Length: 89
Image 1: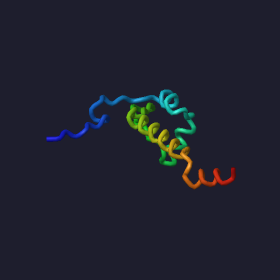
Image 2: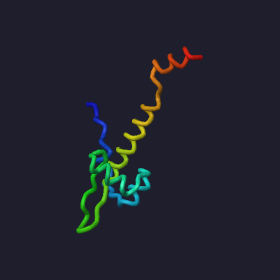
Image 3: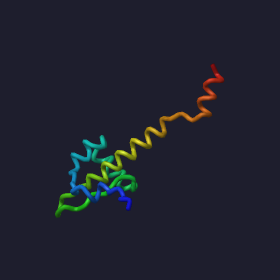
Image 4: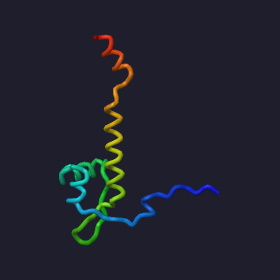
């Protein structure tokens, strides 16, 4: 029987990050975090009490990994761009 890989979000204890830690991990400012949440492009926090909120660490880590992947994909020149540059030389 083949074992399925375990999802790290279910095997690791859930850790909640406060806003300052989220800012440090993402490089985003407070206003950028809330603007992206309003756009639906950033994980939403969970309420911890009357005033406190926290973000699930695994969701923030996944968002960062996705941004890295998107940035690296955008950096790769397409083959048509390379051909055009070679022809100009």
